[in-house]
Image 1 (spheres, rainbow, N blue to C red):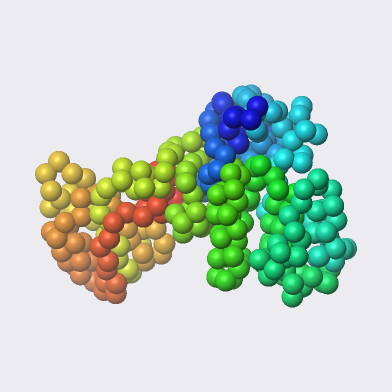
Image 2: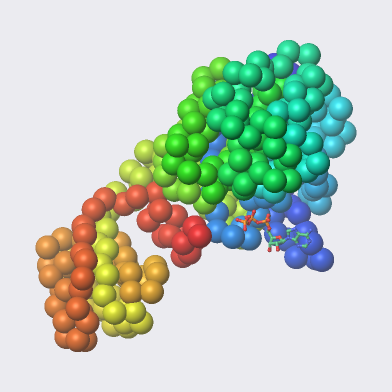
Length: 313
Ligand SMILES: Nc1ncnc2c1ncn2[C@@H]1O[C@H](COP(=O)(O)OP(=O)(O)OP(=O)(O)O)[C@@H](O)[C@H]1O
């Protein structure tokens, strides 16, 4: 099935103790593209990806990876799929480079281990046992192990979580290169900049189902509103502020106010000069000093908040 998508999921349901944590999820991830799966904690991202990796059995629905069934065709898929798990999933007693060489030796046409080690900065800890590696070092080694066999599809669970900025850039560059070579990449992430920078296609999952998907630019275009962010005292009455803003908002438009972190407020909707002035004077009337106020266009994080009502972290 040379032309089948990297991943195709139709109507996936997965229940734990009778509760559906994935609930009718549909998703297509193409080859040669980076598909980012975003969602709040517990949305069902890892469970979905684990069904693709053959680590979980779906209760309902169809999952195909390269046109094959991850469970029934596991042996055929193994050399064609790379998996980087959140906890690394690496043996802990062996030295880093030895482990990578061993993994490479299991594939017919592995990448050059020395070159890959260099790219991901593994050289400085090549002789250290996996057990003694830092979280970020283990993360990079797990990525190297996932791609050393030249897979056609790669699943990356939060690939740059906990990495310093330099390592993060190295990981992103490598992911782009794999994409350009035609590899289908499915990644879960909590990092908005990672999704914005890397993803060709974003799938937002909440309560086990897809609530929005598309190219980053399209998702942002749909949310063509402006945003107003301001920092002041925590715990203000956002319902009262929403009412105050509704009285001055341009005709037929609505604004929405949320306290996204203690003392940090986000106003979305038709933000115009009167809305900004009203928000500031309303705070003053509550005796709350606004220490920072910015107006900007919606970011992916705003879109996400709007869809799920929750922050990514
Ligand atoms: N083996 C299991 N048994 C019971 N419940 C489970 C099991 N694995 C996951 N869950 C539950 O399923 C839900 C979805 O979990 P999942 O790990 O897929 O979410 P996630 O979107 O990946 O979250 P996170 O961003 O925190 O990694 C959670 O409520 C979790 O507690």
